[in-house]
Image 1: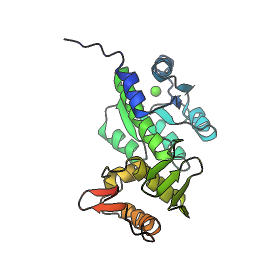
Image 2: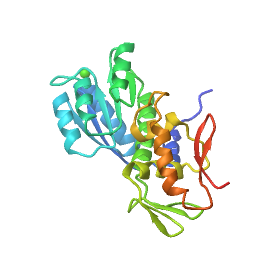
Image 3: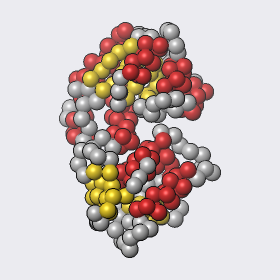
Amino acid sequence: MAMPMASTGTTRRAAAGLDAMRVLVVEDEAKQAEYLRRGLVESGGHAVDVAARGDDGLHLAMVEDYDLIVLDVMLPGLDGFGVLAALRQTSETPVLMLTARDRVEDRVRGLRMGADDYLVKPFAFSEFLARVQALLRRGGARRFDHRQPLQLADLELDPMRRRAHRAGQQIPLTAQEYSLLALLLQRQGEVLSRNELSEQLWGVNFDSDTNVVDVAIRRLRLKLDHPFDEKLLHTVRGMGYVLERR
Ligand code: CA
């Protein structure tokens, strides 16, 4: 019955276009930390740093540039919630929290404080890896760490220079508008919901009664579409937004 699954991870990674990433593991249980470190190195050639204390982990997270932080809750020095709270004041690096406690309030607390995902110990490495890959994909999308220019009709975006042009004219964009446009352009033709846009761009799910996403879209639309005949950014009523030629 069992099918050979050895190549699945590699195939998925290749499909997602993930390069080796820098990962910080903050975990005081040495065996568990080494197990995760080795697994990440072997599965994707990721570069992994390990910190055994919360305060050490926070320090590393502040001075180094990681693509993902794996953060245990129960830690000496400073617990995982303390690390997360300090980190989120300055950084949007994706955080996967680990805990031995399957307590709903811990999970809610972590997510509310800005953790991107949550895994309860003990877990299978395959489950851990699936979560890591999902976060790295999202993180990559959030930072638009792509080298290839993106294009739709006469709209061009150059990720190296973080610039957008339409019909050869530069469109002046704020960092937030640039990120929003890059995400829509990467996934052109696909309807992106407000939830997904807010998660990808701000790392949080804004309450449905806030209009942060709509305001950002409106600003982008003024610069991107308003001066031009062909409209590229469309509202799909009740669903979200899509960038495409119509
Ligand atoms: Ca621990």
